[in-house]
Image (cartoon, rainbow, N blue to C red; front, side, top):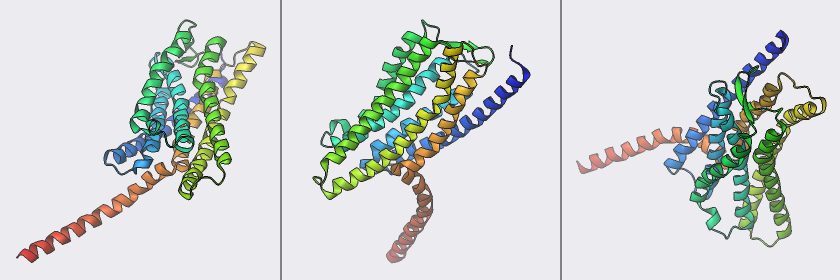
Length: 303
């Protein structure tokens, strides 16, 4: 049995997490709809479309995962889906790293710079990652109902299943991201003064974006430390903290909220889309007035 103070602490953690997840859902939904609007009306430069589509994948994943965190106490099956979507979030960052690698180191390869490839890639990854995760989690009963927390999620005290989920969804994407960005950095330093000024400017911009994205990924890594500490403590002492699940998901909620804002600041193409909304809203009425004036002059001239 857990005492009243523990119940109160758990209620406070859950309430704050709900607020963070709601904020992340709102921001992600708004930004995702804005991106779709600009892509539909072709307001994005051709060379920026892939970057914007990759950002749309990230925001869509944040939106879906935050929504599932909010509703995790409603349907038990969402525990498995939430685990898969967490892995998809890191894989979307891996896709972005892969695109930067192709754009900088292998810019002559047009096949890997196709917009269709990066639209379909998350679907392919979802189809591959889902059975890989579930083939271990389901036999080991990795996702269970937590009676003290009233929702289903991977049980952190089930060490084999949580290690498998962490390896597939967390460690593999992060290791690949680190390897790719390290390769990009070495490639740029090896090139020296060989490239033209245009290529250098493009690589400088990409390198700046890479640094910002690496900061975001580092924060994602740091926010997973509380869960790892509690799991290691359980392995050593054999005692489970009654708030283990809520404490573990609290940094996740913070990261979802932070990601939804940090991506707007760190990626110029995305930032320009948001800033252009205000410009578009201001310019459109003026263009209509000018068009109306020209039409009036034409009518007057014909008369």
